[in-house]
Image 1: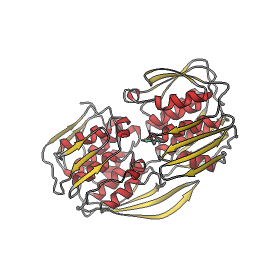
Image 2: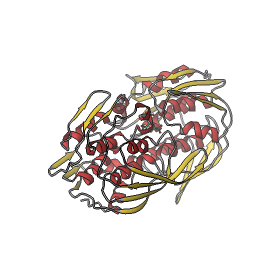
Image 3: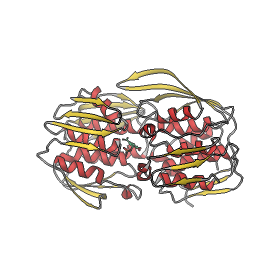
Length: 441
Ligand code: S3P
């Protein structure tokens, strides 16, 4: 097995303060919007992970100047559709669904053909969800069954569109919002609930956007062709990365953790709400607002007792990247938990509903999985004393990190392949679990 790590000891109680890497969604959005702004934008604490680096590399190939000095990233924007490149170029988005889908939105107006490719995991994912609506703007695509590699040829005469987004995908919604930026007229998107960072950044940038929020969907109207002023941004910490430590602490008796400066945007805090329903003690302190986003410090207090949950479907979208971890929490709960309407999980970097079930099987937790739901028969006394091997999971960063957290909570002798997977979203993950006391070989 390549780059495997061995964990064979449970973590001892800890009482620490942590700072987590920058938010991935915000880092990618800042970079893409800075490329469309007029002149120099700067960000600090930009996440330096492969997904973000790949985004920056794609922008460089599109003729955008980017410079890193210490913790500051500088992008010289060239205005709407100001990309400048030699005829046929090829962009490699690596593992990043967000980078690839959002960049396609910006390329709706590209002057010549551009090829987009990705790694093995990204090449298995669905792109019809973006090529279909982007075609309505006038862009044309060459693709086999809506998968990467995809060649896009933009249009000189984009038409504004009206579109109903039904998957609850922020990537699809944001791709269309970026396409709308340089399209004359008003684009209308009726979108099922998903994270709303793009809307908040558009508002902060004074891009003409009107928003109406309903219980099950949001109505977004964007008037195109408005110039964007350059802007500086200090990226807060990523709640999805913080979640590995939230679960580790919540399930470790006598442990306590403070995580500083986390982005607690209401469309991202599903994990906090679900864990509270399961009886976990979590407090949010020092809340403040920053350029449309909400930020705070999280205090988590460990406990051994967790209530099972029938997870409210209304919380799914706000916890979409955290379900593997929530399944680990449900494994420890005192009863049967049920999660449903989660077919989108199988569309992620790996089929995560299936991988959630596989991890539970490996640790001896009974579960029943369908293509959209999982029932988990928790065991509050679960302690593992056997060898567990995790491999062949398409190097899904969240599968790797979830396996590490489960090993530290439940014990057993774990051998987990492809530790380089953390570089996708959270390069300092292993350093941070060691700081809390984990022993890793
Ligand atoms: C993201 C949206 C989510 C999430 C992904 C990041 C984003 O994907 O899973 O990790 O930054 O827009 P979907 O929009 O496809 O659900």
